Image (cartoon, rainbow, N blue to C red):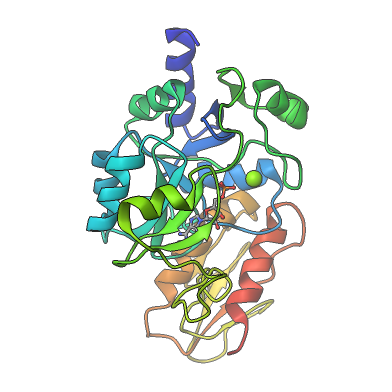
Length: 307
Ligand code: AMP
Ligand code: MG
């Protein structure tokens, strides 16, 4: 990668565009984490039928500390294993400007410092964490070379920074580290033995049926406390109408011009704004079932599920 390519990539990212870049695990499809629309473009290009939370890539613990609450055990893990294939899920700071779409509406954010010079230069270049899932269309094999990225996206491929083949080739280990004893969320490139050698036993859901939070039980998806109903044409008394398309009665509008990317970008922050205790319900207008509409409807359906 030349310095010119790096500068160009930084410019694209800061303007809200996407750039594919190498990490030691797999190639990532990156966007600046604070830009809702840029994050929505990731889901659009990958064609994911649902919104999974993304990993925010940082250039070190100091950057992470600006966005999430770094617990003592998280700090210990960062000092020992960063840069490297260890992702830590931590509580977002109250002031955290990262898009709620990147957290899939949750109060937590996954952070990782990749061990790849190109990735690190890119993050330092923007000065903002870069969210990046694997750079492949949904359902395809994770890319470990620049060529995989180019061929899997074809004409739609974004700018790709070529850093040669990835050295680890498997995804990062994901730990929930908001409490004293971390919980394994996903096995990956860093072994559990290495982690336990440093901090002692962690909670492994498959071994520990009483684990307070196994991934299966984890409320890994945000649902508002206020009841939500889909495909509403108007609001009942007391309800807030969340609009899509022209809707003078809407309290908030996902996208007046019926732009699905804009709607995806606004989805979680608007649900949160309306979930403020002032309304008896949130009535969401119909969202078409194509493109990003599939993921939006999937999320609304989960949010409207009656407990
Ligand atoms: P990938 O981007 O494909 O490497 O996947 C990211 C992994 O991290 C997925 O398994 C996510 O479910 C997990 N993850 C990311 N953010 C969170 C979060 N806030 N809470 C729990 N799991 C997360
Ligand atoms: Mg993937």
